[in-house]
Length: 119
Image (cartoon, rainbow, N blue to C red; front, side):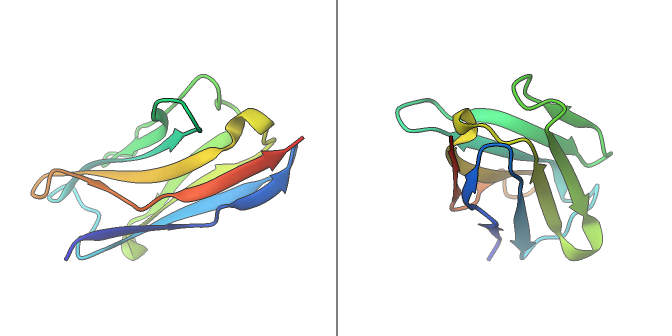
């Protein structure tokens, strides 16, 4: 069974940092199985939005709102993607979801992890 499991969320004060991880099981990160991995977030009462993505070739992209503060990275050997979040703001408060664009299984979502930034 292919599964994504996020961890690392929590409560942090504004200006602080958190590191989210997304571990994939049942699938390996390779050019034969993946197209991209992404982080999305959904704040209460708002639509889910793309935060950051990394292609199988390593190309990264970020939402304007997080550029310069968030960094996406991956470890292919351990099938893990991270989102390093620095200089957090209250408006970063949301449930963060990991998403895998796979070749054989389509799009896969993790269960989400809550990030709360207090002012």
